[in-house]
Image 1 (cartoon, rainbow, N blue to C red):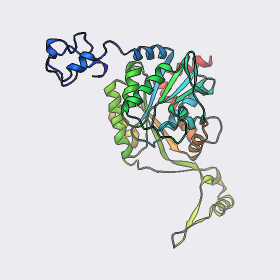
Image 2 (image 1 turned 45 degrees about the vertical axis):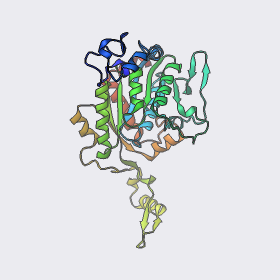
Image 3 (image 1 turned 90 degrees about the vertical axis):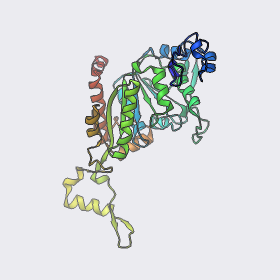
Image 4 (image 1 turned 60 degrees about the vertical axis):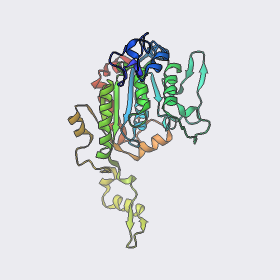
Length: 356
């Protein structure tokens, strides 16, 4: 009976669970929900009102979703937040992956704590224009497991939304857990689907991942959240040839490291390869990958981001991939994806105004 909806097993002339006569009218006689309706509080959820007031200072809200875990969703969320902050926007990053909060590490904020002020909980700041909130800041020990059922997760998400003082934000990026579970329903209901700009869905190219992405797209359509686009992450392994490790297999199946020999050989015999990028498929994309799926489902395709060991290292070290040339393969791809999302949503004008 969420949001005052009439239950499927209600009597024919049900007055509705939010009605003053709920559980008391003649039509309620014999209904299995009569006692619940009669005693349930009426009227709008006061938390939703408080959340709406708190979120009134947030211009744009973007969900980052995935069908499966391990596809790089949180890495994308972190780098999206870094990129928007680098454009001089005021950015908040909210981690609602209650059982697997990895955002604190990916933003270089491990060991930080939440502070309380007279305005509410204060986010933990990476820079003055990039604040972060996560249950990861609340755990006594980093290895502690969060073993919560849905209602307790939902209560914390509500608390994040109504008690965290973000101030004026251009963007609130919400990193959700994989799938379509309690956390997703809570964030959509609490924020009100109509006030969410939309969702970016992250996937890898193979069908095992895309099968669940289709469910994620279906979820968004059912709850009224626009799909801003799909990102195909880990779209082939790409890195400079000289960053590879070279091995030789013996007949006994042992691996011998011949990296130094191979590099010297390339320098002497084929120096033109020293600045070459080598790419290979990691996941099977022979059936068209995310781009084909987007055409079939009528949702935007934002682009491909290769599997780049340097991006993985940036995530491990909690830093932006855009500040130097180390992520020379993945950073341009990520920037292209983010720029396309901004352009598709008419947000590029914000960037022009911001830099004016």
